[in-house]
Image (cartoon, rainbow, N blue to C red; front, top):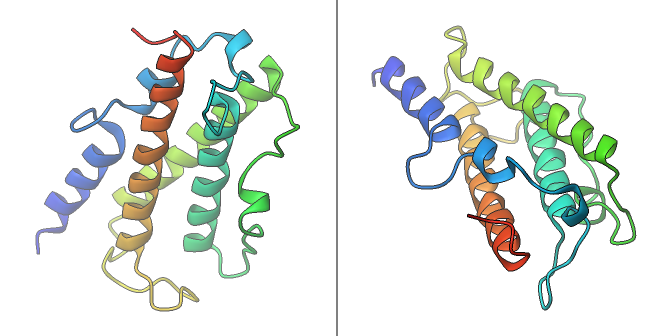
Length: 157
């Protein structure tokens, strides 16, 4: 297997807009007055969806890199409490944290000293590749929900 091709395609999957809208475009221009608004008949606010993405990405990344990492309790600690509301500062902090971890995921993919098909230490047989694909899949799924929520709130082009 050509690891360079694999690494390039993984980075494209994570960063590029190929089969779906990218992260930056999905959250660009989100109006602050809408981040805590729940669309009629819909389950989550924009804040809840994005914060869930951040928490989950952080968990998968730390699980992959740190054998002493303790994952949050599912499902309660993977989502903000329904009564939590984001301030602009909270939203901005979540976005910054998400991108900080996202860049770490990219560095993991680019790290040629790691065989992406090898098992992660303490990872119950899971591979680096599996965890990277899980992050990409999870992010894409919830980005679609963010876009749908923005559409329902009248905040999507």
